[in-house]
Image (cartoon, rainbow, N blue to C red):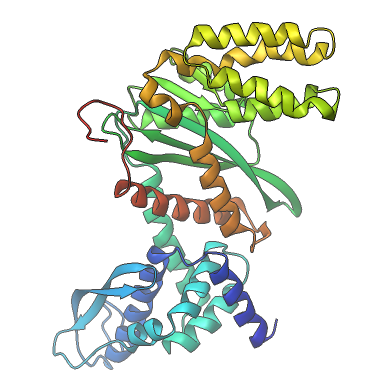
Length: 385
């Protein structure tokens, strides 16, 4: 790949939203500044050499405003003064390209040599593949700590899955990423957890849900999800006492497979929407029975499917009316999935599960932090919303 191609890839990554990487920027620039101090002192930390020209003296925090938010760096100090790392200033002046270089660290395995070349040009410091890997490991520690943080009381739990192409043992396979979000009794939205695996089957779902419970998640009053393969059995095993709300949006989509003629598609959709827009469960059940009878002769497979499945989307009627709009579908998770797709489409095929987990974790961590300063849902009457 040519030098021009590198910068074309940089611009593509920026255009596709890969700039959401403040933690990556902080980790790699901190690493670059430490290397620069070691070269200035001609000795690594705690290293005894005859060539040493001074001694390290800790770090001084410095917060800079960037186009991806404020970032606090740890600027290395030396005991006798006279040293200031140029990597920080050079890095900030070339911020747009640096962020793209950092984005490549998300997908470790794309080309660590390319990351090395770009960071040398931007920061003026030679960074080895080992040092890049060390910085990535530091990032992984931050992301793992976030993924394993203790949870608390969660009133409404949303779970969903999506797939990405991942290279495994020389083959390209579909990897499922499971995502859980929730609304707390205080009305706060949170991203609760994420897991990546080459399977979306019951074992993966069960381990994921159990992991949430192991992190002290409690108080669930409702689980909202689609009818994913393996999820039902896992949900009953781990959250068996918690009511389940099947997403009406997905139910309406699923109904399309049982419609015998395209001419009645919109009519069927309108009939289904009338059930979920009903003022009470009893009304929704009445509409359902009428619809089952309506299509019993003209679309018997659809009629049978409606009778077996539609009531799974009625659980929401058992909850306060002011909550229903927020808890009846997984639309909030669908928006997250669209954002994930926007960020990952430039990658195409991930080199391994670890690179995919790193990217999705960083993105979800960012989204969760944004939610903490965003709107609150009316979960209890003490909230003025």
